[in-house]
Length: 190
Image (tube, rainbow, N blue to C red; front, side):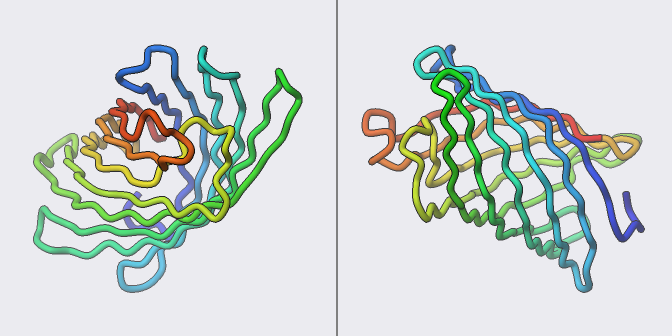
């Protein structure tokens, strides 16, 4: 991927709430990266998710988005990365034949520490992300307000595995009895 000005990425991902065996989400997404000057990048994409939840109705989501990213070098093996992302979230519930949508802003920063670089590159990425909701969708079970996470990334031949754990803090008005959850995630990018 290095040296290219425009990169297209596809990813398949799965997300599971650790304490709730009834909630799962799978996704298939596409994104395009445009490298700008001085470590700035511009991204755009569309995310597609299917949420399986026995406590609530299953739903399908289409999420177009755009993002501006800055990655700053601290040392040869350590980078500081941050982004500002805007999303247009569109939910379709087949059972009730309903459609709802809203916009959301996200700000994330994380460290990118390369712990091994040979045939595979292995990186650890601890970070924090904040969600700013213009109008939260009250039917959505998890409209986050903050995430703290640790992600492990393994890259080889322009393909990437990511896995990790997040602690998600939710808006109290949408989840009054569950202000935090631990979530496992796995994704494959190609």
